[in-house]
Image 1 (cartoon, rainbow, N blue to C red):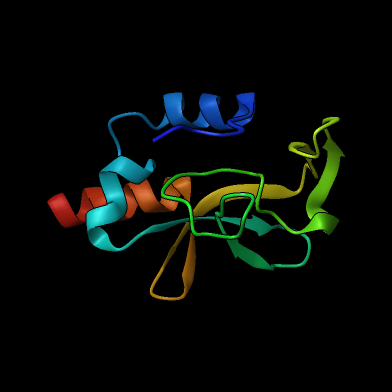
Image 2 (image 1 turned 135 degrees about the vertical axis):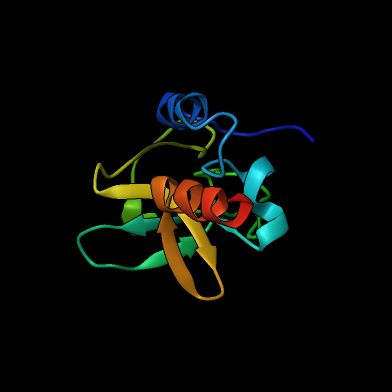
Length: 109
């Protein structure tokens, strides 16, 4: 799979949570879906490709326009609001990366 638009903050988070349930590859089996939450409004959006299909990892191209702060000349998202955080949705509930990591550790426990 070709990964599109992986900004540095997502790369840093993936590095921070590598080997834990805070990354998609380690929590998908427990039905965690990559998502983002606007911490000001509480609105949650599933991670999507730019064409609207659900993405298997965190991508910012499919975020709502009102969360986007900058696009490149081709229209791809290159900046989002600072209050938008990455995490996961599981059975309708949003989990931060840390919460997902803790949940997966508890399951393994």
